[in-house]
Image (cartoon, rainbow, N blue to C red; front, side, top):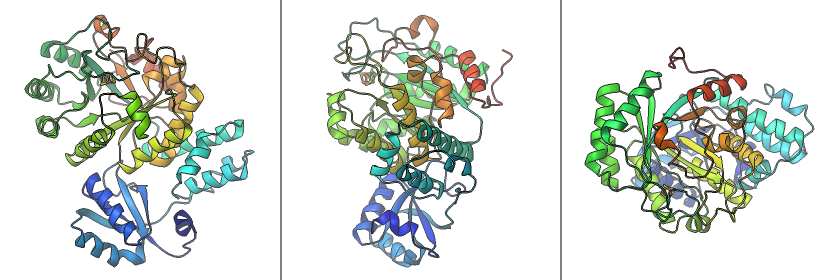
Length: 439
Ligand code: SF4
């Protein structure tokens, strides 16, 4: 009997979840418990237990003494073990079961409704949905989980792309070091002025994004973080590429809240093909460090990359769950002029929407943006992303004279507040109360 089925058929058997102090300890616990014969599942931490977006380990409650002993013997740090009740949403999702679904497809959605863990094969089946009723059911289920976990409000965040210099050569990227483009760097004063504009709108989180640009030393970044915190008290997301563990630590101590470091591909071979200058192992290690240092972590992938298979997208989704990623950016591939992939066709809108929806079903209590890439591929891309499980929009607030120079892909839609609000309304969702719309 497969592991997942044992959990389904436990009848009266009760389950518990284990929360660990960091992703490192979670993965260690997963390894030790399963190699000692304890049946476990990685699940999103149930709401009310731990902080949002945490991954937990679910096990049969009768094994609790054994689990505690194994954790102690292997010096694993955990924060708690909690009894849980699985949800059963079958009755409240009854509209879905009236649709014309294949029996396998329906069985998988019913597993989600009953809080059961999906296997990689089942994730692939959802990603392969083509029939109209199955797509409707998939998107409705994702919307229901989003509403249950995060409500109707769409969170708005704003990005300042403060440098388009980059020392790396990612094959899909219009900013790669070999590109012949006009490069710019914003001064601290220019960055602070742009943050002031964002703050005026009522937005609470600023994303400081750049290529991998060592010109911005640790001290320079710390000064920027401290000034933003002192003047505006806003939450800060850093998206600077790979830095040392020491630097991540110093940025956190200076006041950074979130760190966005995208993996782009959880398949090692595909990762290497995209990132000739990066190491798959290193990127995953950095993701763990960021969690350990207390960052709210962001990652993401691109749908429709050269050589990408549907199994790769399933692996991406499982990576997010395993590493407890909080913010998951999923966008279609869009070719950038002058790059090795410039002639590869854009990613498919429907597959991108399905990837968002399945990520919502698997990871549940996470932030998923309706991305700029979706808005660049289709006029109604933002609304459609919101309709299938997304709950965040990121505005581009780089000064107007610079933003055209920051194009990881060509033809980028510079999503602004007006577009975001209109997309939110079209999707029947709510603009956050902190936005000062009269401005
Ligand atoms: S994806 Fe990021 S690290 Fe890679 S080339 Fe582009 S800006 Fe540089």
